[in-house]
Image 1 (cartoon, helix red, strand yellow):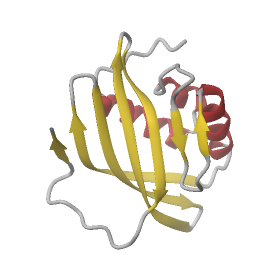
Image 2: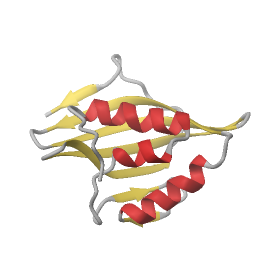
Image 3: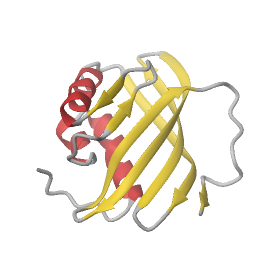
Image 4: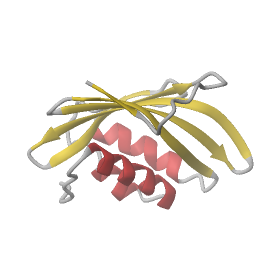
Amino acid sequence: MSNNSFSSPEDVEAAFYKAIEKRNLTALMTVWAEDEEIVCIHPSGAHLVGFAAIQSSWRSILNDPRVEIRHQAIAQWQGMMMVVRHLIEQLHAGRDASGPIQATHVYLRGPHGWRLVCRHASPGSSPILRPEKEYRVLH
């Protein structure tokens, strides 16, 4: 079980992308809820359910030293116990860039703080219209 306690969805998201940057699978999996109903859908369409399946998939991704993901938060829908964030990602594999990728992260607050329960990423279209500020909070 994870001993990390995240005080906000933004903390979870920062830890998620830092773990990808550092290629640290253990750190990456601490952001996920320890639940067999968590979901991760990759841009390839792979639909993964449960901690073990998601961990195995990310292990493969992080083993490729060329993979780098840059991200920008676009919008956020916020409640007391759940936050949904929409992001735009740019995937780089060495000198090759693909993307943009549109990603949605769903965070839930539980007894041990905030955790990621769902990530859905899919190929986006270009160009993407950017809002005037970093992201919008919608209620």
